[in-house]
Length: 168
View 1 (tube, one colour):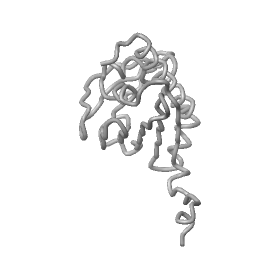
View 2: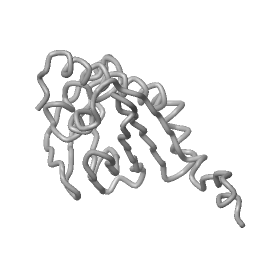
View 3: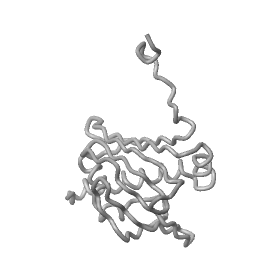
């Protein structure tokens, strides 16, 4: 009997290349999921504190792309590109995220949306091609804090939608 069969989780083979961020958001799972599916939502909350987003192209479907620029509070522009690898409403989104199509340093992210009583538990699991790229994202780009701020922005956005009753 293996360790996992006895109930002990196996060590992830990607643990040294991962960033995992979770948050419970006081909004229905369908609404939290929808905030990822429509560009008019994404442009209102995507990115860390002080960032804004300008979209050049957006097609939310498997194989579709989101081509956008994140504008930092210091005036720096960051070219970004995402392609959707899996979409399973309202439970899961998998995507490849880089600076441009065919970026050799692009990383994979899987977002899961789970009901949590009257709220939604979102988990963002990102796996980088190498440990060095993960460490660079953490140290140079503050990826953990930025991810936490991004999910905080999402929480504030969907909570306001629920408060105002403006979903859809």
